[in-house]
Image 1 (cartoon, rainbow, N blue to C red):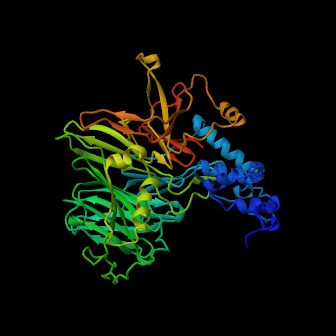
Image 2: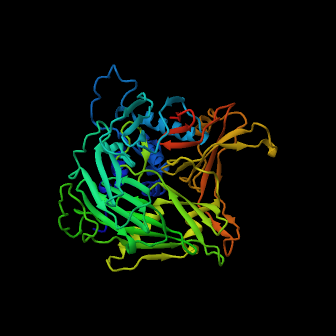
Image 3: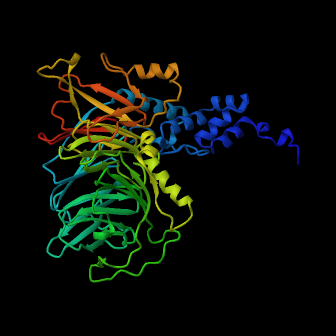
Length: 558
């Protein structure tokens, strides 16, 4: 038909149906629609639901408890400290979102609580609202962090069933993986338990995963859970990286000896089916790999693993190798200025958001903070890279549609200038888990007023947020006024860093230009406010300041 009647057109729909249609659009599509005609623009502007979706997308957040339409609210619970997030009307959700944004821009926490934990610890973790630390081979201490509706809850297990050398947790799956090492037989064991009661996890087909290493290992560098997989990176005479599907017990990645570059310095998951290696050799590079697990679409069937009492996964069983999908070169270096160290750190990867939270970072919003050290003097720099850019290379490789396609290769000038931000080393981190989503929180550092050294300088807390768009118009006046109520006398205003910067150093052939925008927020500590803190960790909308000597964990922001 060459003509579509008005009754069949989109604009002929009632406003409530238009809103229902627009709720299925992504942010970019919705904003384009608002530019097509006045009626659509006014409809979107009047709709609280659509404005809420737009603001969620701008902050790259998801609503952990979406509003349930057409459901009659149950009677209020007399024991609840506040109504369920799922029952909040859209207006209150939008107000909570704006308040959250304003508080983070000013580092203005609602309240502050202190928790005393035993110490010292040999391993620790902060994931999904739970802070855990191992005090000995059989002693695990857990702290479920408080939030707006729940008090904190401490739990100690002085007689944990598994021997704890290291561990990883995912509270959203009630999962803790304990690592133990038998040096006599070069054997690594992972025991899969529930956090709630320390019993073997019912979702794990094999409650204990074991693997033989070809040589005696020196140290565990990395253990992390990413949804249905667990990764373990360690150093023997050469790097080794293992990935299990913890639910089935099948070893999905087995890279040791010649199967992994000998110059591999660190590893990080990008998703539960991809990871990156950092190579500290020459000028350095980031190597990105993709892998499949049993049961994935297109994955070949694996032979059953040998069952020798403890259902041992043999070291040399035939396993399909991971596929390298991309190689990213770092800035060219001068002769003799070799990259010696190349570590990376990012946020944890949980299967589901913390159910006690109202908001959570959307997938792929994470930022990776890398530390690079060059030459014999180990001159150091920080490099920030967004996870969604790294994952875009995985999708680019898959779009080629050929399993035998070589990796996507990018020289520094092709990718690094627009997609990273490099600067000199900012602060020494004594504690990990200082990244959550796109936000990085640094340890408190001295602030010299007017450049003059003082006997007792004030301490300043600094946070970077890489979820910014320099082209976005300023906040409306009413939002700016709301944020202003959290401003403190003498505080610096949040500063958007959108202009390019250049790092000049003897290590590099030419000044290194980078342009990734970010927002800097600061808070100058009141008298003694940050005194004694050795670092800060971040989990959702909570900041944890750690005092090692006093064995105190302070929840500062919520």
